[in-house]
Image (cartoon, rainbow, N blue to C red):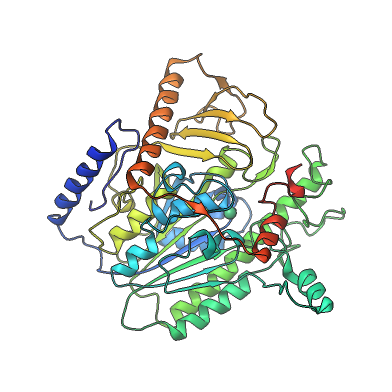
Length: 491
Ligand SMILES: [Zn+2]
């Protein structure tokens, strides 16, 4: 294993940990050559708000994901993968730095990743890769720093010209697709990637990052996906204004909620089709030879399992569990499933290991290729955090247990710290209060140590997030999507 694992639960001082990592890196220089083909192309796909339990390969009864199921059948599927948070910005920062939120520092609205962090794209570019990224949602905008290291980084969102005097153009643009939560970006993303295949340099391996946005609310898939999974629905609900609509609430009729879920599934099937065409376009150009394709998400989505809708509200499994599939014919055996818990912070070390990068930045994650190849690694715990919108929630998750420390809720209420037994109660319906179970108390202590280490690592790295420079159009998109404080979605 060439990746430097960084156990944040360890009580080691940051300086000493730095020395230890240096030692591990030196050991790595003498490691045997991997049997994987050298310097593969890398395609990393993040499907925003995609719950794994709504994919066929994760057991969903509907045919939402034939292309993702194919990747899983021909590659490796990680059964239990988790994000660092339940919303887009910190989760993608974790994907791109291999660090927990308290270490990369991008845990609240309006912050920019420090340019001092070494990102996945920067590392791959330094290793000789051509790096290209395409995104469909506002938090992937380069103003937040997530575009650092990409040779090509393109927005696939609809642009509404804020300064135009043409009221008709503005009205048309807004009603068609101007609102980012109503924007259908998949086809535009596909077109942009196809155009890039003609312009990319031929003499280098490539790293392609694609952020697919349409599964994110609102749930308005185009035909035929709008009726695909609920053709007989006769009700009024149409999936628009999911967060703002007063018709979408925890006491809504079961039949209407079922329809919403069918629309969410329709968006997944639509996005799966975009993914199929995207990979097909790469294959047609001969660009999928010796290529590692990784499919994941930033977080999931809540449909009132614990009283909330959307995401960025809680740290329950419906919002923190993500899919993770790796497809690399010739290097990874087809059809393997890995039961171990893995984390979004593990993706970057894995991709750097696959690319043969040996001088690794300090990361919380670790290389998953041994697991993907059927070897075993020690179990890891995952740190989960939610600091946005006046919340201050922190949790530690293992395969068996989740402990949550509720520091502050938006309404100022004090919530008790609780533990959830994920084996007996995978739906997290029963909460056991802190102080009533010694195994839980040990997990709470481990959570505190892990947080301390993550914060110490941020100090050690010396890279501070700064205020992002958000232009008016981007701010409008974020507000419409319900992310900025004071939006109508705060209800
Ligand atoms: Zn997201």
